[in-house]
Length: 287
Image 1 (cartoon, rainbow, N blue to C red):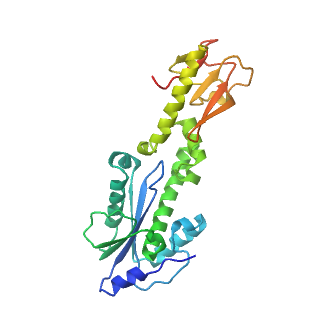
Image 2 (cartoon, helix red, strand yellow; image 1 turned 60 degrees about the horizontal axis):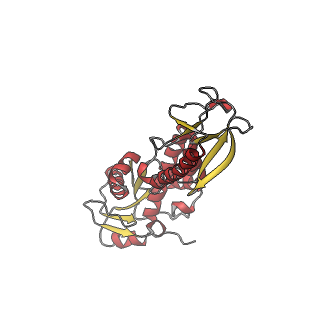
Image 3 (cartoon, rainbow, N blue to C red; image 1 turned 135 degrees about the horizontal axis):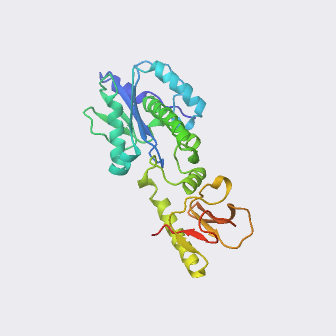
């Protein structure tokens, strides 16, 4: 494993520059939560540590340890974040620039030069160098990636306590199977990025259109609005759902699993419904 070095920083020090800030972000591809960026300024002479490397190559325990090491060695650290709502409104590129600027604004020291991971250039007065895969090349950028990652992961674990259906504590808002299962069961929250859920919503619409056509042609369903409970375990609404008539199974038991684009849709059978006796309901989300 090749560790990042301070060779980029040393070249700049030799030109007479004093404060070199490494910048990186975390959460760009997440379906929920904020985008977090960090800026780290090290002294010219630092003690090399194998844990200060690309945060993606570290375990959670290693990142926590590296976080402490960086806090002790760094001259200055700034962290900035932008919300999921900002991302939906302005787009991810603008959100990245904003997060970088916020991180830089939290620094006490004025950096003479920026080393930035990737190809996004924030509108900042200091000269800067953009480095593709910079977190594996520059120790300052690697440190920034760790600070941003640990900060955001802690935020997502806290969010997971509020939004329990989505397993944010483990997936950190990324599109895992468990996250999509949570979306199917509990719906979209205010913490989600709507602009990042377009494919999911399109797949939901496609499946529901097909199911609605089937339901309508069979003429054994009545569609309605206002259903708040399905008589099943804890009378909990399972959504999205379709209830099949005449199947002798326990209330709320999954009897089929339809899929589209990796998203699960459940067909339920129930002998009892909360509502008018004998009425069979199906959700019609298209109206």
